[in-house]
Image (cartoon, rainbow, N blue to C red; front, top):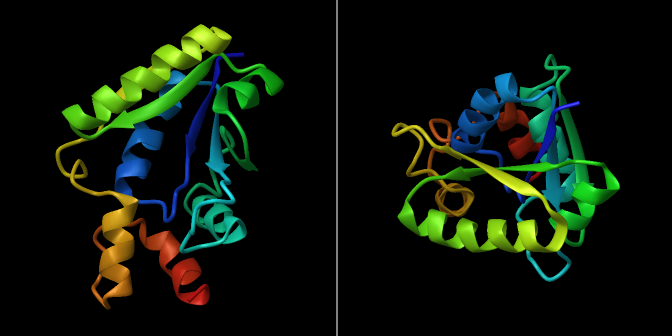
Length: 156
């Protein structure tokens, strides 16, 4: 089976994430969206809310599984017999950062990273920008999938 993991915090899921996921679906039999849990991070939404957001968007897509995990992504890959990590690139800085991680994952676990470039219409969107706009009372509806708005509003 040709499966991959798309790891991230997804705090919250953005249209940039959705762009990468949608374009990766034809490439893999299964895409596991793995929500990283780091006790040292201060998330805006708890893990369950982040899972609900992704499931709301992809409720009718059988190729997607949503799970939470902690620890190294390479260990998650080994535990689930995955050979590919999916990552999105917005800009050259993302590439430099992600390249180092991809090379480390290949060295540690023989795991390949597949990079997809975000489309120009979503390349400026990040979860941190969305959180900042939301915390300051701004309208985020053009930056996130509309399906997650009820989850966001129910988790204030």
